[in-house]
Length: 434
Image 1 (cartoon, rainbow, N blue to C red):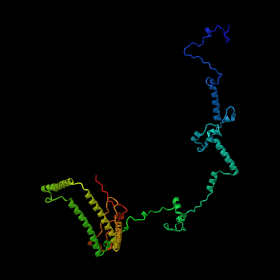
Image 2: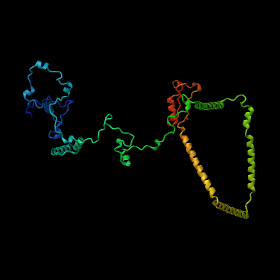
Image 3: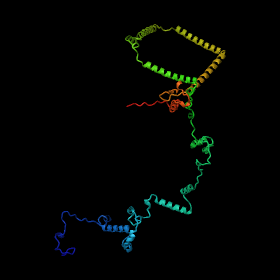
Image 4: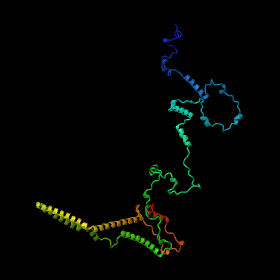
């Protein structure tokens, strides 16, 4: 009897398992039966490694050699090295490519794809159709709007005349503050509303900027007594003015000393004066309280003694009231009648009142004018006049060469600014020594 595969039956063990069979051993996995007729099992249970290696080899040949090596001729694959040493030695260093360029060079000889599919570029088909349409229009000589605007801008000539240089000899002169200013030629004759809306006209200067902060002149002329060679009367008048300033300062210092002076032994308060000062006003207050109590008692008694009015009394009071009103009306009527005969006196009173109003108006204008000449209070400090620069009689120089300057011009200008209400009065900062 023979076996199914052609062998003898004697060489088989029980149940047809031979000596090389691994059936029944531990660690062995039973071979899984797979149906290869189905497509889903082709990729899972088929060995395609050799096919992938073959395809990778073909791709490598295409990248490096530009095609299959079998199809290439021998001349393109091999060359004969003649070994020309002289030619190699003459090769200049600068002709050799840099190493960075060699690194950046592509090692693939496969050319990049030229046509890019439309789904990789947004709106690729639309742009392609647009380019084709533009090419057709250009062949006909029709340009697009952007190109027409660009050509018009390039061909446009500058219509504005170029300003001449400031150092040009033929350049004319004009007054920049005058009415006939060439810079304002494009504004002249235009409507004010148009200039305001287009912001081409000048801004109207506010009226408050035209008014001065003070009516005082910027540079005040000193009196004749401050001259280097003054007359006797003018010099004495200046000395008297300076003397009055010093007297006022001395009086203010004496007043402050009197207020802060400690009392002497004779002026010091005694025990009797202190007691009298404490008791002062107590007696008068007691008298006032007693009088107040008496008056309250009288009022209470008068309120208790009041009786109710009778009908006859009320009637008499009403008649007296009506009679008083009639007399008052007759009195007013008489005054009005007599007012007709007082027209002249009334007219004189009205004229007198009008003249008084005019006089008051003039006084107010004078006062306002005087206040305009005085410095105003701009800060926490008051303005103080500078010291009068005056020389004594024995200090007057004999000539202008021996004259010594008095004061400081910077301090004078600083005080002038304060007096003319341009800056507020200030004082020098006091630094504390640590």
